[in-house]
Length: 186
Image (cartoon, rainbow, N blue to C red; front, side, top):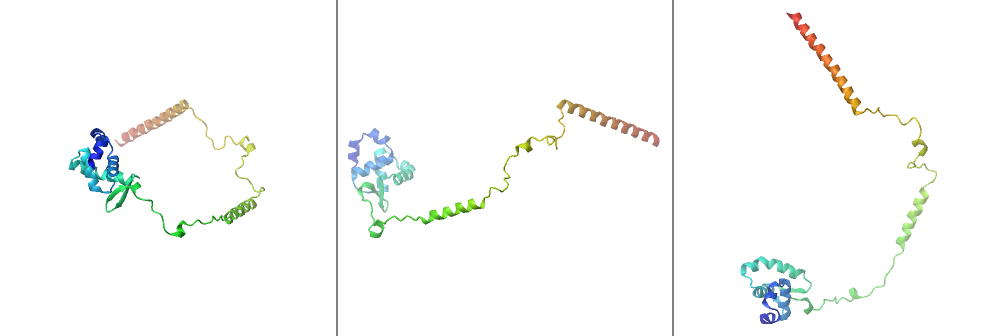
């Protein structure tokens, strides 16, 4: 079996080929299912893998074979090619029988009744709270309500400096009062 692949592919090509493709070629040339461990031994022989290298890739190759649509698990960890096995068909005549297609039109009628109800409950006479009142927007007199005077940064600095001076003057008078109090105690 192994000589068939050696004749078909050169050794360099076998070493570069993905292991899942190599497994496919092994099964295809053997034309018989393999136990997974035996299939891995064949792959290792073509690739020249050691036992430690086999153990490193065994799970990866199993996953790839399991996902690949070309392979079929025949049972008891035996793997073959899917094309060897016919597609399973159900023997149940009820499951395979053609049934007439029934269209249930009753659901559409229910939707129409809800639309009618919505149209009836809305009245054009009701006040529209989302409307924009253009006249109200531009009336005079409302502009300054609740708005404080705008102060420039320069003016703000001047005001802070004036407040600091007042505060310093208060402290100076307080200090002089303390001195007077101490003089009185002597």
